[in-house]
Length: 153
Image (cartoon, rainbow, N blue to C red; front, side, top):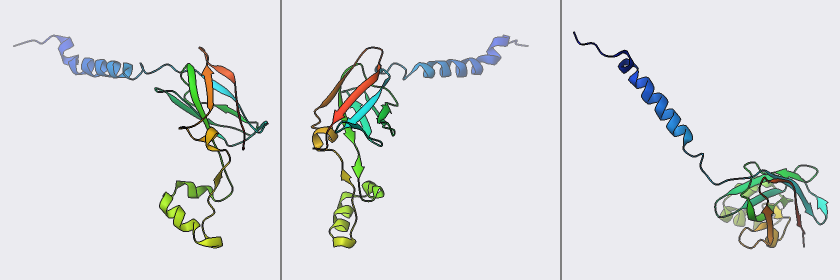
């Protein structure tokens, strides 16, 4: 009779636990982020419902302003200089923003009965990530005092 050592019967358990511990450590080594919150002022006033985006080459974070213009980036932002842009649409039917651009063009050309497409509140220099003039330098340790100013002009 061959006797196996008692711990060999537990080998599958050791493999499973080891795999979980190994995989649990994967993905935790991404770029560092810091907590960022603050206020968005448009034409000098806080505005509700503005989408706020911070981005570097490695990290992007976003949040939405409340009634007092305050936002918190859900996943934080990378420390150092960040490109910032803001997005808010006014008027029209917000559900149309999810439609195909060709469908929207056809609907809006139908005259007064056509689609009422929401318009951007802000010009591209504040709302287009490719040309935004907004930046914010996120300090080590993050901040709760980020003030982002933009204009509808």
